[in-house]
Image (cartoon, rainbow over the protein chains, first blue to last red):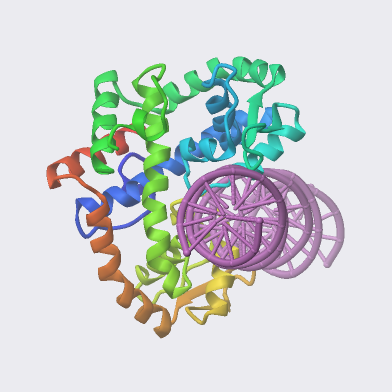
Length: 150
Length: 150
DNA sequence: ATTGAATAGATGTCTATACAAATAATGTTA
DNA sequence: TAACATTATTTGTATAGACATCTATTCAAT
């Protein structure tokens, strides 16, 4: 494997920019597939895991649905429905916000925190394992991605 | 914007590897969103566009569904249904393979080729525009992504 | 030739993404 | 305060991703 040309059997790309786009989409799929199989036994999706992490980051302060949406990895996703899924599994609580009844306060439950704790080490080790780079290469990659988005 | 910490309002990451995973997922979403809006007026999804490109790369030689699947950016996708969608728009033809009746020969149509031709320049320019890197940085990014996947 | 394994593809189900539209509450302004 | 715009969230609908399962061939072996 290795090079993207071999992986998807494409001879050549227009330029390094177009190649980078394809390479990024392909690499994301590679990583998400790994995450999926990690979360599957816990009946959680990568996106639901991400929402739980956002909520834990609040340290007990309630968060609105739109604030979750803003902080999700995929801005076009649907926080409202993800929160509903998590609520049905008792991983989050949802309460009407008293100061503004349009808003909904979302909080992670004890059960949610426990699940996160249980998964965290596995996720971190899995990420490390699937990112076959040295530490300085990983830092360089982060810098390039940050710059890419402008 | 710029740094991933600001973009998703996360204070810090466990290590550069875990940060790279999050950064890759976020960057992919940024790019796919751009692609979506580019393809939308033509009633095409990024994935359907990708299948058309794979078929054009065959230069008239029929391809099987599983061969398309192998070359898709997302290996877990469903080539069978994507081909069906494209067929309904007359962008591809599907024929029973005479030598092995389990297989299906898929071919891009004239209409499909014309649509690709029409979109190609736009896509390449859009990719260039959304990848805010120099050429040598883009090459470096490609090398890092290839290495990352091992 | 018959049985059983392997392969190609289609289909079913659930979750997520993309985006439009509906609903409800709040803010603003004439 | 009535009318209108804005904002927060939900809901509807389409496509795609992630599997599992089913069907139809084909292959392999007895």
